[in-house]
Length: 473
Image (tube, rainbow, N blue to C red; front, side):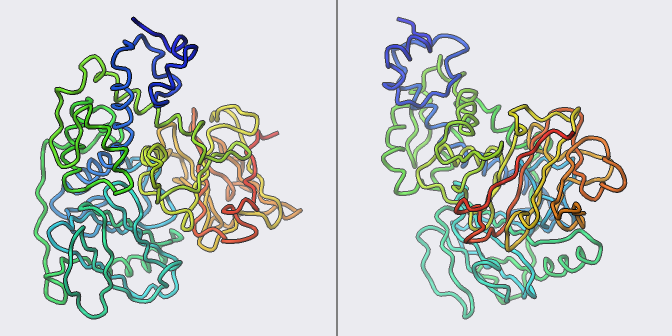
């Protein structure tokens, strides 16, 4: 018996499949009714493992160098971005042009690593630490631990031992850890220099070398790793067998959380068992070729259907980033469009694909985003509006401006309101301070709100509303 999506919906069989297939999952053809539950489980497993596989692929690309250079550096060595990324940057989706990253990948399974932060002298910064599943398990920084000098030992699962005086333990749930530090910078030559000085005082060493002279070994380059294709594209083009084989290997060193156990136990039916190699013989060959595309489509569908997504004036956002619990779909969505997202207390990322009338953004038109007097985004850190192309990468433009914020010395209107001009051509010299350049074609917008106000007005409790983006008159 063969069933189309229409007949499945009519008969209620979609629910029997566990409600795991996206709206367009079956639109490209037929699936046999026999085995549909296995197909549902396989797409569930794809969604579940997408963050861990993406984190590993990101780690491979970003650490596949001999020494730190640009946005890449060997395992266990700090990468210190000296200027904002430009339109050629493809290592991470939805990069920002407001902070200078100070990052590193470490493996903490064999030995803890000690990360030291110098006195920030009041400057806004945060150093979130992500586990292999993209959960932000710790966030040293101005909001949480202040701006004084600090030292932390990042320890792996099951580690126990003594630490030097003045070093605080931060226990990682997985072997893979990504330290994804961000230090606010205005982008002027003087401020670049000030942040560079802070970056140069940050330190990362294995515990056994703490307090001793230490020179990291050169990294080893694996020529088989694709260093040009965007990581998301590399993940998405993996076959189902390649994806699950890698996922199974990664789960040996990065075990699922205890709360995931009931969910993960079901995957044994399709050959995926934590701690074991993937058994490809249990994955139906006629399903395998469809799983990656359908799994990814289902992830992206969460923009529209996930109950944790909020809609306001053409903007969609969630207050469920950084810590996802068992919302595996939201975790995968954030991985796909903004790997490395912070907890909402540190940052909220409203995103818009369409204007106030529901029309997709097009650089052939001009748009305006108006903040009434005194109603710019309420933050204790900073806010900015960033322009992305359809794939969430920066857009090349004649003034090399990828985001706009108060550091552009925005001009207010006579009534005190502030207009942001979103268009491909300059709005004119008198308005250029408020111009966010757009591409000729499709684009997307992201409003970053770092350290949003905890109370009125606040996006966290809904007491501050995001203004719509409208067509310019």
